[in-house]
Length: 223
Image (cartoon, rainbow, N blue to C red):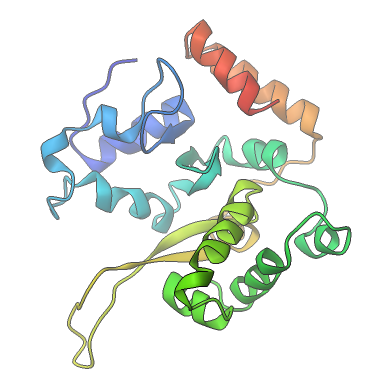
């Protein structure tokens, strides 16, 4: 699978073809966004900048985006997203899992805030969660990773930081949304199958497009 992608539209075609696209190399002999694009366009702040595309895919409803696998940023096509969610996620709600002792207190509190304020940006979320202090940064980040790893939340876009006059001022901030909200809003199909069936579908999909080495890694990911 050798791609050289220059435009956003071409990148969409790759995501649809390969199903999942990590931002950086994660799966042996498998594409990632930074290996299929030209390095000189990254952070160029042009229409050809893959760094801008990464959240645009999610904003446009083209692909689910978040740190879903091994705490690494991944794009998942609309076709595969419900199946990946079924395998990596849980049938129980975050609340049920919290009361069963399977979700941390911080992750539960952050999930509640996001579900009440869909699309909230990281800065506001951290303040509302009471984790603004520098010594609580790691706790906040780990809670976000926990919720993304189970695909309870996704990165829905970015919020630009602006000053009082409305001009862009400083770094943009990642925005989060619950998976259910994002999927419903973007009309992602729901599937009524169990984990084993979802896994079988995913392995069948990847068997047709990738090497034996890639497939072995993906089988472990979706085990």
